[in-house]
Length: 195
Image (tube, rainbow, N blue to C red):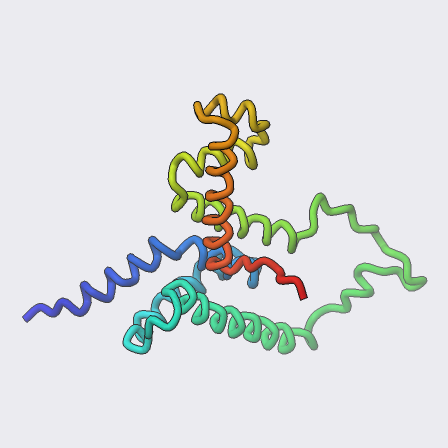
């Protein structure tokens, strides 16, 4: 006899992936800085969530629950990398001798980076999360946000493009920003609170 359990678990995983996949990926990428590892961690998180589905209580949102699982997976991955680096360290060549002359000067000075790598990864993760969040914003609010914030149109041009008054545009923008802030916070991009 065929059981519906397999179908229900796979549909739960598909549901989570569709609703929260981008946010989970952005969260993981901002912590492990490697796309393949971030993808693997999201998959591991969904598998763990399927195994622990019976433990989920609606004390928090689904996304918060999934990010909680993912946070532990990220910590485990960082620990694994640290252990791996420690075991390889004794066999590594003397990096200082490769990079510096005996007088302490660079053998070949490093070139400037166009951007800080951590900032770039965080920006990529933020942009992915913003795109996901924009999908959930009503069309008029989304359009007002894109025109003003992403395309940098002034209020008069954006109002004209949308066929609304300036006051209506500001209301749409305000609502879009509120929705986006709430969504981004749920995606792990928490605004720093005043202390």
